Length: 442
Image 1 (cartoon, rainbow, N blue to C red):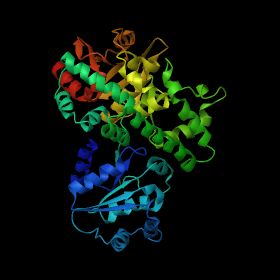
Image 2: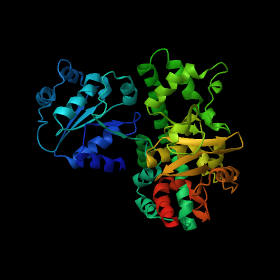
Image 3: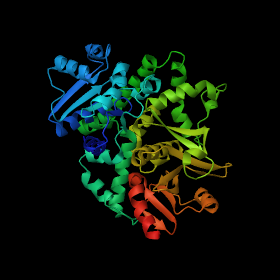
Image 4: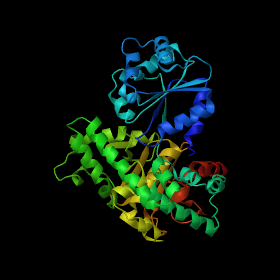
């Protein structure tokens, strides 16, 4: 299945500033698959080393981190010569060998000609704990579940994404096309973007079979809690994880520790929450007091919303019945828009490659996301229905005079002066549409 991160991997390979690459991402988002495909297509030779499967690999890093000695050891162990031109070395499940992570520094300093990529499950957790992390000596890329566009392309519907990618304005799509895309989006809300789930649906055309894979993935995540987290944090991680659907179902989606249990305090759960963030299992949107650059400077670390890494997993965790897909109106209303806002958070994370932020004002108005695109700040309101009510946007606009007011909803593209609506399925296009729009206005 095609992944859009492939282009970023190709840029890394061709860069004059290339360093050893760390590919981060939650378990089962497809890290190993994309690296193997990339290696097969872009290199003459691939040396794949899995530190979980082959415990002998750790011995290469026990006494000396000299890249030359490590490369000689790899040659002897695999029979493949890592010094041959156009060779890619993959360190998979590298979290099992902290010394291998440290060695990336010396590969950068002493063997910059070597093309080396490190990846692994819960690598974000391990990196946060690393004592000798190679700061400044590595490049980073993050892999997330498949986006809606990747989902369509996996289903053989590239003609739809090609048509959407060509859009540069807010002119409406033909209604038949708009409705077709909404129907596929409803299925994506249930199936989500975990590669194995998507492949199961493609192979079987059976949503219930895909949901069984989702359940297996969720079980593997809870198994990771007990396997990799500190024993003192396991129950807290589980409590946060189990309460995510209920937190998102609330009208005010601000994360409330008291919703976990009445006596819960923020400081008691900070480590557990950070563990889930480092593991790539949740996304975080920070509250800002004012929409000014840099947005992080106006953030409050104690006020935030959290989302699940994948809307399909959220629907599974929330026990949404697959039959709901057949209803033309219910799906986008379910959990008061929880699935919709979670989907938008996912898409924005990938499309903009920036932290998420939102804004509210004394319970009078709330803007679901504040976007920083080309040094301009835009308010984005997310609606799960077709209402044209925009009280919060108008309240925000009267206070901050944004260049445009944005809404994402099931409605078609349209623009009315400073107000713009983009269909939920086209969230990925915000950056490409807004930049030419802004250029014309200026």
